[in-house]
Length: 306
Ligand SMILES: Cc1cc2nc3c(=O)[nH]c(=O)nc-3n(C[C@H](O)[C@H](O)[C@H](O)COP(=O)(O)O)c2cc1C
Image 1: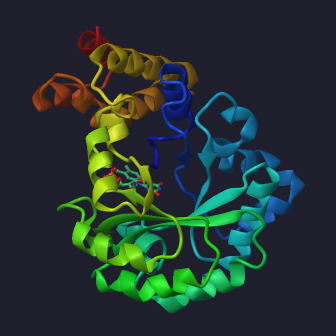
Image 2: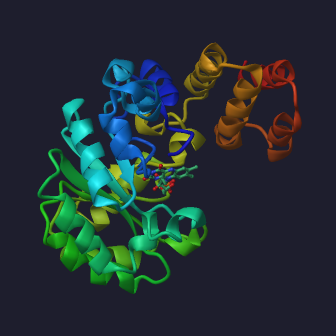
């Protein structure tokens, strides 16, 4: 998740809960116009390192194992980035065709490509023969209507994908409503690849229930609830471990942020989600967000996690 499950989070998470998460798909690396030059031009190595900073293998040692994710549909850039990631040691990359953000979908990227199966085919036709790593896909059931996924599945079935992760909401829903399990159940038997379920998993019991209803599901991906309930993979709510984790995350933000302002911004980004993991009210949580001084924010958060 952009800005959240980045390297800093993954490192602290692995330190606090070793082995609890088997694999994380990274926040997406967006294909950019000059990416080709960036990947080939040695004089740009600092910019390239910055672009790839979240997936640099040496920085990820001791952290949660990852599959890097790519957002975009420009074949040349896709191949160049995918193959660079392969050379860095990644045997699989994930293609994001599920992102619902309007500035992205308008350009037929993320879930914006879902209504256009022939565009998906064109990308896969161009990319797959040249791509060294395996490709998996992460998607929603459509941008505007659920019928889109039924048009898309025959296209996806024509390519040797490693897996298909489905979040059964529409792009236009963003995060509102509930996952459309009926459509998920209808589409599941039509997909020839391993299917990973993603959406509103709040507890291990949710995983068990979905597995019972849909035995064909091969794996599960947790999103927002890894922040709302960090001990979710342990199968229980453990407040002591949750507080320790939040404390370590705050320490690492302060240790690594280049300025006080960026530390404050990052803290608030996490706090928007993480406060739900604690036994506090929304009104209390909002006080932290209104505060402008890092030391005051620290003081408030440390009171909550003592
Ligand atoms: C702030 C935010 C950023 C996200 N960034 C990404 C991303 O970079 N790549 C991706 O595949 N999904 C991203 N997602 C979507 C989640 O991975 C997941 O598919 C979605 O939240 C549904 O799962 P959940 O109900 O378990 O949260 C993001 C979600 C949020 C809330």
